[in-house]
Amino acid sequence: MVTFIDILKTLDKLGRGVEVGVMYGDHCAKLLDSLPSLEKLYAVDPYSSYQEDERPTSEDSSLTYMTSEALEWEKIAREHLAPYGERVEMIRLNSIDASENIRGSLDFVYIDACHSMESVTADIDAWYPLVRDGGVIGGHDIMWLGVWSAVTKFMKSGGHTLTITVNQWWIIKGK
Image 1 (cartoon, rainbow, N blue to C red):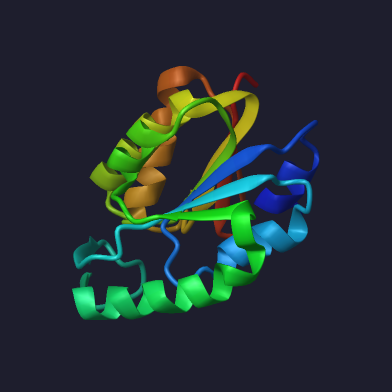
Image 2 (image 1 turned 60 degrees about the horizontal axis):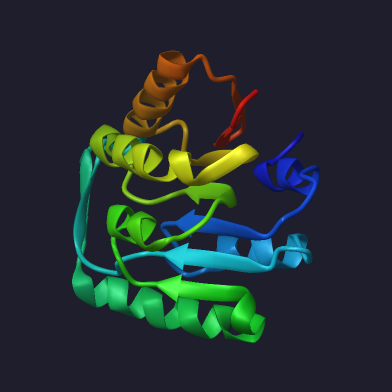
């Protein structure tokens, strides 16, 4: 089975990428370990409280993350990502504000933040223009209704080709 990281390994050059929604930093570490040519990974997470809607497998269809929990996640992520030094830059902003602070093009963006349709749509709309032609935008939790709805809406609106494997999705810009 091909994964998002496998697709990134096929790119000509990996200069800069973004992960939106870092939590503990596990996936960021996996990206950095799997992609030694990746020069800079921006790890974007506001680490604040938020309401998560449309959980796929729960009678309670929402889940609230409190700021105290999020701050603990940030501490764990910083410790987890410290060994990568300057290859990773943690950005403690919401996704939209962070996208406005990034200059230049990106090789990839991986979205795994708030899963509501509105949030995922806003993330895609903010980050897709920053992805270089031939770069990749994708993410996690495609089985969540909000993620699925936002991703398929985007795909159909621009004639993009969507790839889905297990619980990941991606679109190669310009393909």
